[in-house]
Image (cartoon, rainbow, N blue to C red; front, side):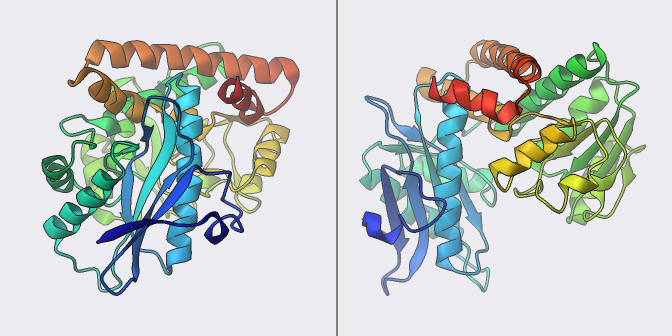
Length: 349
């Protein structure tokens, strides 16, 4: 695996391009693309951060677009969480045959990350395992998250968002009498399910394309009702929680929603800003994804800054993030504009 910077002309025609600082292509001996690293913002004296995902893409352009989109999102996430770091993202393409020597593959990837000399600091996202991260940590000093349960802290942030939304809607954050629909019970979805149960929720509907994930969820919440993944967003609930892949909130699904709030861990939940307007027009409280799911970033950043996992610092930052969510909801109500617009004001402040 090798790495080279792409010229701006190779990316600036894509709608996901947003004045990115740099975009790198990862390629093999035959110059065939293996993935991309996109650096959206580079702030002075600090690295750009964003996890790395391994996914099945139908073509390299789709992978590139994902890297551009997600790196942009990471800039928003860091700014909204009051962190000084720029946003970046690593996207790796799973071969069509699905068979790779994972240790060699991630050793090679670590070498490519090292060539950026600390500009890009990364960890694990969809498709990477703890074993993969162990390899990356072995071969690169620019890896974070090893030994940190980032999914747990992501789910805590989502729970805070749910509580803030319910406090605004019902003047109480009590979960016992509320109904929830979780789309996806994988890493963060399962952690969120466990937290909802611990906080007293008993009316929960779940869906996942993975039967094994459903079985794990049933062990945590045997009373949860399982529905087809294509129908989960149509359930009559108080809070819909998208915890799978992005793009769930769009012109097709938003009219079908039967919830009062949307709070989830999935990235890029909205297809476009008009979708935020559609949610607002329907009176649905929407917590922007890059704020609701920032807990995972807060947890690995703490490890990066302190060289160890500082639980007290992470909890304090999560509590501050919850106050910011509450303020976003309040300002949205006062000014009668979508929460996404209020959140963007914090990002650009």
